[in-house]
Amino acid sequence: MTFCKFSLFVSVNKANNSYIILYGSHFFSLSHSKWVKGHLGVDTVPAASMYIFGNPFIAANIMQHDIQAGLNIPPRLLVMEKEDRNGTKVIYHLPSSVIPISENSEQKMIVESLDEKVERLVVKILTT
Image (cartoon, rainbow, N blue to C red; front, top):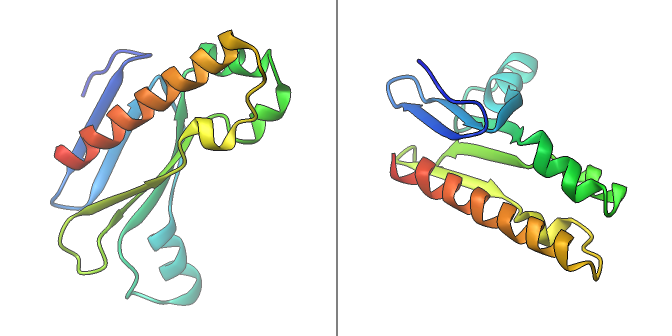
């Protein structure tokens, strides 16, 4: 597998419900379903993994205007099986809905651009 750093890359392996999602940099992922199974022995939850991803340059440009944005930067996605185990669901917050945006038009433009990138990533996941 090859990918270009700071570009969109999505790989979906439907055989074992694994996802590799890189938009910019893949910082962290956690299989919530494996965690629940391992800690509680519950095997009935849908497959679900949380991904933290982003572009450090975009993050720095957003946080230079308001460091409080760091609470929600980098963005996160929860990619999971639908409850009926037939298909994929993606849960996420649009960055503009959780990042404090000042009156600064540059910051607003950067955050809205990030919204578009996250939405394109979600569409790519759901259509792959």
